[in-house]
Amino acid sequence: MMNGNVAHQLRLYTGLVLFFFALTHFINHAFGLISVEATMQVQEGRTFIWRNPVGGVILYGALVVHIGLALHKVYQRYTLKMPLWEAIRLALGLAIPVFLLSHIANTRFAHEVFGVDDTYIYEFVKLWPNVGVDQTILLLFVWVHSCIGLHYWLRMKMWYRRTQSLWFMLAILIPTLSLLGFYAGGRLMEQLEADAAWLAALKAETNWPDAVEATVIADVKKLGLAIFAGLVALAFCGRQLRGFIQSRAGMINITYADGRSVRSKPGPTLLEISRANGIPHASVCGGRGRCSTCRVRIAFGIRYMEDPAPAEQELLDKIGAPPTVRLACQCRPKSDVRIQRLLPHDAGVSSVPQVADAFDNGVDMNIAILFADIREFTKLSERKLPYDLVFLLNEYFRAMGECITREGGRIDKFIGDGIVALFGLDGDPQKACEDALAAARAMSEGLQKLNIALENDLPQPLRLGIGIHFGYAVVGKMGYEMVSSVTAIGDTVNTASRLESATKEFKAEFIVSDDVVRTAGVDLSAFQRQQLSVRGREKPLNVYVVEQAHMLPVRMPKDPNAPPTNWLARLTPNWT
Ligand code: FES
Image (cartoon, rainbow, N blue to C red; front, side, top):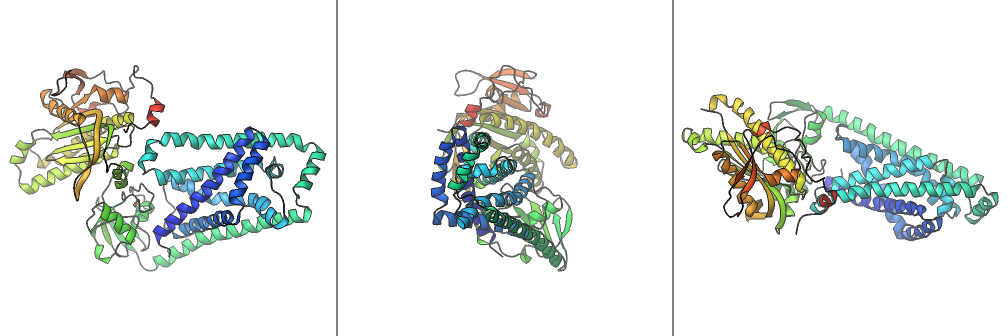
């Protein structure tokens, strides 16, 4: 069996080659909007790249390897349950060769075997209008398949996240121009083809395939389709057979920390087992062993598992995981295990350690900072045994941490009973403030649930104080050796802390600065507005005082006076 990491890398690089080929093809079509001559000139450049021996080997080698790896992946799949984006990509990937074979047979094959000069005009006359729809479908399938793959590869990279909207616009623009160019070229060919003399001259000039050659081309296409269909059937049948053989080895039990237990044949990864049984499991990278969001603590059964492969171990080392923690997408239990998923199932990209790498050298950026603290915790702690206190705090941190990460925040640190969280590390100020407000609301609700769950352990319900402010801060990875994390420093941090402590003065659960509310573009006029003096600031700060953060509406009303969302600003990173 091929090493999973090598297969991922190969699939990525061959996919990039094919994407680049498709991109040049689409751009070529788009030149049809200018003139056929322009299109022909661009095609000459493309031919130079892809028709030389090296280009040809790279292109067709990439195509064969990419398809082969995709089928191998199908064969390896334990379950066909997968996230929607993965299902769409797989379905499109399997459909592309069906449409592509016709194109290859009529162009490259005809050129190599019968000496056809498959110029752009030749291709157009061949394609238009009979197979124009097929080619449009092919173009769209290739583009969507490629874009999904690229997006899920790049979305953990900060530069991509900061400029995501720009790429999204290009992803729409390029195929649109390409299709318009294709359509314009097709209409022109329709007119030219009406001229019999012109058509005869073209056929002579391009060494148009005669009837026998056309039959061979059609047969080659059919043969290619039959081979591909056979390979697809082989992959799916092989997968069934493999599952059957594995199930004969007996079944194993996988027990989750929440008490759920499922049975599985040995062989699939823990992530596949979760998916097959409808148990939500975080997997930002889609099971490629790159994000670590699927990680689980193996509470029982680790000694019967194989050691992590080097790539898995490397990522586990990077996040400082103890030996009982494994990547669910990489480890395949062979006997009963009990596991605990360590991240909420909807953990996002901000939970990926690689995102933190972008802050190694420190950046100056606009972020929202949330401070939270348990009210009168000192009094409570004096009446508790150490064991009870640690249990209580861990339950509280777990509940609040889940609320924060679920809403797109990143925990900066836990200090005593306090929590500091950052929002907007991906450089979108408006979303940062929207998420921070949603997190405050979720934390308030989460605390209510926690109070009910711990009713018998608490002399009185826990109460929170939450403060949020938005502004410039220096964000960077700080600390020493293993004890380092992405944190923020600056006046914004101090102000957020001041807002949290002011909740005591106002006897309210939540205080948020006007800067957060304005940046989020929401209307909190239903809540009390106050002015708060903050040390180091000349003018008092406008804030909103919210008695209970869970009183914030789920869908906060938009401020009618707020400036419209500035999409251009959203495209422009606010890093300096
Ligand atoms: S899903 Fe990303 S590492 Fe497992």
